[in-house]
Amino acid sequence: MKDLCLETYTEEIAPLVFRENHRQLEKWGIQDHLASEWLMFATEELGELAQAIGEWQYRGDPAENVVKEAIQTATLCLKIAEMFQVISFKEANDGRN
Ligand SMILES: [Mg+2]
Image (cartoon, rainbow, N blue to C red; front, side, top):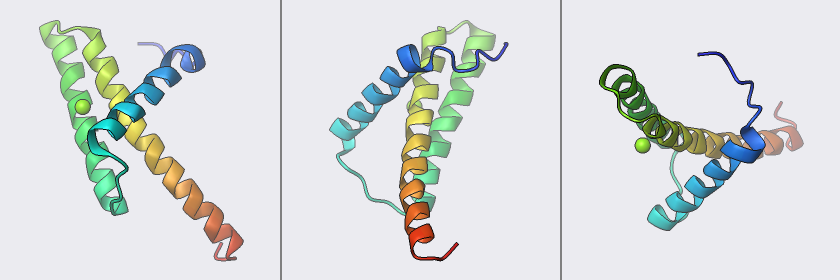
């Protein structure tokens, strides 16, 4: 599989991430967890992505299952990036780094 270089990100992928974010918020509300817990959730989703890829590759399951799991993983990873971006800004302003 050749890298598509996120050429479809803005039109195709980003809307799926925003939709997944809203789905998660509707299901769980605004969550507040330790960083390690966020990592656990993202890792769990990554495991589901691995399973979906395996089932697509070896059992002929639909590619849309892979897309769904990748978007769920990406959404959690982006949430982690956003939270740590805020921490990073605070650290920079506090002169920690
Ligand atoms: Mg999943």
